[in-house]
Length: 376
Picture 1 (tube, one colour):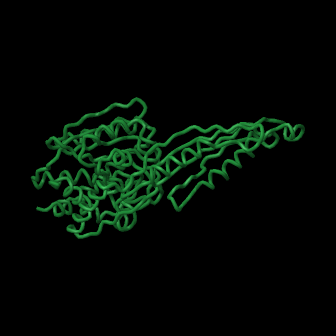
Picture 2 (spheres, one colour):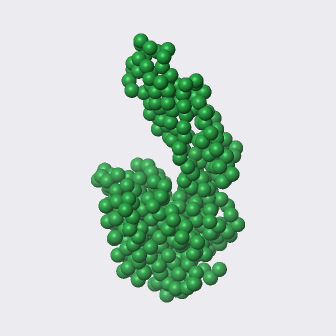
């Protein structure tokens, strides 16, 4: 039986696993909740015959690594189990199926992709097909908050891999893979002035919020859509009431850029912010979190291979650029061929309408199975 035939026959089982995964709530910063799911996942991988290792993390969820097959080379299937949704979101939005779509917190980003990758493995086993390389699943637990507890392990596994598959959700109704992604930086800007009574001593005050307003305009003006660089001022704090000239203000800055050179250039501008008003100070902390995922020759070759397989399976596989980031940014930056966004078709990442379209799950899992058994 073909991979696609097996997977089509097991569509109901795939949906059942998807429900089970979603019903484990896994907010990034709730270690106990995430650990419950990774323990469940470790047991599942063990039942499938994988060699399982759990990496304990003191301040993040424990990471699960499971390897299947043999060989001197490996392929890395890079997943994250954490979601942006807090405990209790499942009660508000329980898993449900409606009009051929599965809804629920984390169903699209990215538990559905993990299900597809696991069933791709099962399809290979059922067909008794040999995998030319050992396949390693690495399921991390803090991707949504920057991957501080997992980056070193991700890069360690990537360096041992011939290529990396990232079953993050696809993009758009056609299910495009994410051929390129922006890089990402996060910065905090702190302004100090001098406090004073807003009625009695207004002239003696130096308004930190006024200085911050100048910095906001300066930052927003750095966005350049032509080069693919965006800077967004997010959270702003300052002041302590109506009648006090504020002496402190802070803001958070999100930086995205499509190339490493643009990312570094924008970072230098942000770190070099200087005050405009006499008597104020401006200090900036923060750093780059992820390099861009660029269209390297290795990435493009892997994409073309996947596109050809998809055509044989009966569907097109477009590739697009997205402004969001993933752990695939890390692996690609190491020069390891990386194919990102080969997970589920759907919509609504980080949104209340988050859902997976169920019909494409079998052909998408068949693509993963075909890649894992490809000799080249």
